[in-house]
Length: 346
Image 1 (cartoon, rainbow, N blue to C red):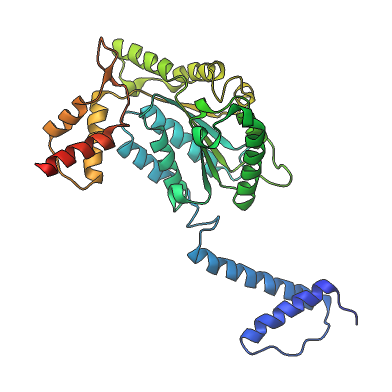
Image 2 (cartoon, one colour):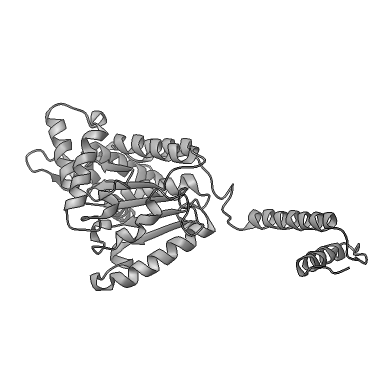
């Protein structure tokens, strides 16, 4: 009786497995039913090996890949100060995306605001909520424009490499997170290479990109956001009462028309960015909260007077009101380190 090559391979593998436990017997050509059973047995062996492997190495499955939306919400509220719009927008968008077993497209979030407002910080919190290894997960890809895409004349090369990397990453894990930092410094014409992966396609070359998440970080429209926030403050409107819808349109227009990575970009024109998330400029009380957090992170105690003194070292604008930190909380790590160094010398 002639045995197919595929069946022979299956029988050989089964024999090898049985040999490991000293039970390998002479196998002769058997019926189709037995061949199917053999295939199933090998499948179970492979699944068992995969489970064993994933206990020790990162895999695209729990517990390595998770959906801790509640933890994300709590972390944003506790550690990202003065950004109520960010809390609501990110949690709602991520929750809806993760709970949908078949989303229509990849989730695309665009973070905008002045430097030091917490855009990178929020991105790392999202990574922590989605992956056991956070930003160190192999399923998180971070691109910084000034490092990875520094030259306008090399855009063709960047387009090819970026396309290849995204496809390889999503093939390995459909739940991959891509973060593009300093997108306002990205060469014009580059970002649209990822448009097919963000669009409403079930599959591209037999790969499903709809469960992936893309985040853009940009200072674009930061001045527009700051002016709108200041106007609300003048009208007696607390920052927690500022409406997301009022901000999104001005951010979208600013991003599309200002020079930078999203300038005249198809992904904006075709409405492929799901949420434009405004990071409001930080007031002094938020800066003080950042200083307190930095002391806690270093396991050091302090007092209100020290917190105020360190906050005093930052610049506040506009000059008429001295209301917002011009660098947000970006310099807090350095300021606290300088304070502790001076204190230790004394």
